[in-house]
Amino acid sequence: MPLSSAFRPVSFDALPGWREDDHRLAFEAFRRSALRALEKPYRTGSLGIDSGAFGPAYAEARLLHRLDGPAARSFFERHFLPCLVEPSDGAERGFVTGFYEPEADASPVRTETFRFPLYARPADLVDIDDGNRLEGLDPYLAFGRATSEGIVEYYDRGEIERGALAGRDLEFAWLDDPVDVFFIHVQGAARLRMPDGTVRRVTYAAKSGQRFSGPGRILADLGEIPLADVTMQSIRAWFRAHPERVDEILWQNRSFIFFREASVDDPSLGPVAAAKVPLTPGRSMAVDRLLHTFGTPFFIDAPGLTAFGGTPFRRLMIAQDTGSAIVGAARGDLFAGSGDAAGEIAGVVKSAADFYALVPAALLAGHVP
Image (cartoon, rainbow, N blue to C red; front, top):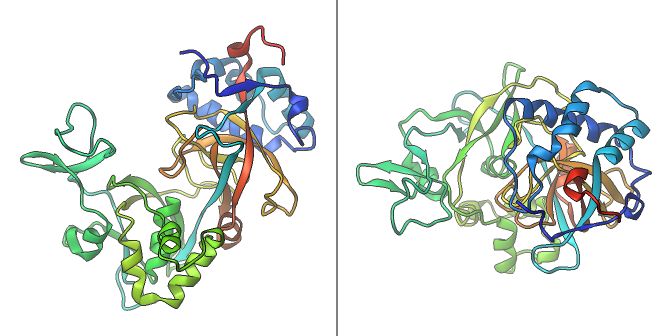
C-alpha cells in the first residue's frame, strides 16, 4: 500500500517546539505499543503507514527503558521522518479535543441513591460484518441484535434506559447521576469508588452501534448554548439547571455503551484502550483508526491550547486509541488523565492544530526534506 499524499515530508527543524519538548513519556508510551505488537501487529491504516515498517523502531524500543529527554528525542529522530498531515476536509489546520477517565462514586447494587446503572455486554449483541449483514441494514452498524430472522439493529439508548434489557442481570454498577453515566459512556472508561473503599475500573466492551450524537451540538442547535461556548463543563451546567430535560436531550444520542471490569495495575496510567495498551496522560492520543496505524507518533502543534500546563501545546503524542467522533486525517483526541482535574482539562480542549506524523524512515527512503 503506497503512502498517502496526505503526508508532506518536512524536517524536524520545521516542527515548532520539537527540541523544547520532553520526549521521555512519549517514548515510554511508544514502548508499550512495541511490546504489544509482539502479541499481535497493528492493522495498517488506509493512509499507508505500514505497521511492518515499525519493526526496527519497535525492536530497539523493547531493549531500552526510561530514556532521558535527549536520548528519547534522538531515538525518534533515528527511526522516523516527520510529515505534515493534510486535513481530510480541506481545512487549513487540523483539530484536537480532549478526553479523560472519569472517577465517580458507585455501588455494586441498586439503592435509593444509586439508581442509574452501567451494563455489561448482552449475549444477543453480535458483531456485524459483510458475511452476516442483512440487505437494507444501515452499513454504518458494526453491532446488531441476533434474532430468528437474522441480525437487526440493536436497541438504542432510549429503549435501553426505558427497560429493553430489564431482567437480564446485566447491571453491574450503579451511580447516583444519569449525567455522570452518560459522560462515562462518552469517555469509554471510568474508575468507580465503591462503598467499601475499593476502586474498580470499568472500560469499553461494546456498543449498540448507532451513530454518536453529542449533546453539545444538540443543545447548540436548540439555541440553548452557543456553539462556541460548548464544553463538557457548560453541558453539565445546563443539565444541572434543567434536570427534567436530561432524557429528552440524551436519548437523541442513540448510541449506547456496554462495559467490562478491568484492573488498575498502575494508578498513574489510564485504561487499556483500542491499541491494547494503557493510555499515558498527556502523551496518548485517539485517532481515526481507519486512516491511521496505531503506534504512530504524532507531533501536535496547537499554540492556542494552554489547558495542559499553561503553555502552548507542542508535544509528541502516540496514537493508541480511537473514537466514533474522531474522523479525519488531522483529527485527534488528547488523553488528559484520570479524575476531576483531568476532566477540567479535557472538557475545554477544542483547538486548531497542525499534525506532524512521524513516519518510519524506510517508507520515505531517498527523500530529503
